[in-house]
Image 1 (cartoon, one colour):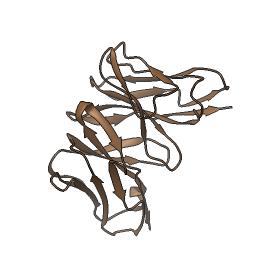
Image 2 (cartoon, chains in turn brown, green):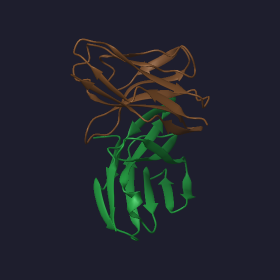
Image 3 (cartoon, each protein chain N blue to C red):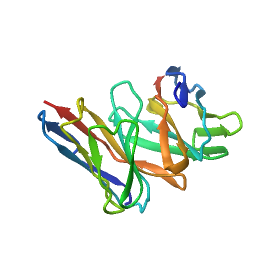
Image 4 (cartoon, rainbow over the protein chains, first blue to last red):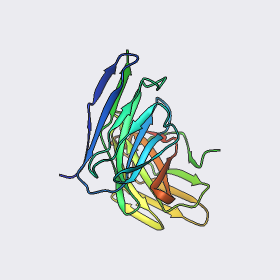
Amino acid sequence: DGGITQSPKYLFRKEGQNVTLSCEQNLNHDAMYWYRQDPGQGLRLIYYSQIVNDFQKGDIAEGYSVSREKKESFPLTVTSAQKNPTAFYLCASGGFINVLTFGAGSRLTVL
Amino acid sequence: KNEVEQSPQNLTAQEGEFITINCSYSVGISALHWLQQHPGGGIVSLFMLSSGKKKHGRLIATINIQEKHSSLHITASHPRDSAVYICAIETSGSRLTFGEGTQLTVNP
């Protein structure tokens, strides 16, 4: 079945460490997105990519990095520069022509 | 002011009631999405609209492009409809902006 796979589902990080969240889709969608969700708040856009080898910063890109080397993959790295990384991270693909599809999310906790 | 405003923020209903959630936006859009998020965090796309009205089961979504307004209706509500309902607009360049969501609780 087509969909988006995010991994890991839960991740613990020590302060000062970089961590990478995986997002893979087999829907043949061009556009992919990373969002952060904090308790009681709406989704905020971190980065998005409309095409392979191109991506744009969203509203809260500081402390994060991404790559889009393949259409299917859009990994997010949470760097040590991100001051408050504990959050729920959601990856999505699609939009306009294609219905939005979300991954199950990754919950990152900084110890 | 947010580009996307949802109302109400919280909504409690009795099983069987007709429910309406509203979404207003302030910019030109290419599409509007209604999403459902359950307590576990998973998000499901309910509708994608660029004009008119769509229906799926007990759910109906409408959009008025001139008034920059969309509504999500749930007929014959059920406790399993309890979730956060999120409106999102899509602007040029496939950029998505989300409302803060409406927490719906349907009591038996």
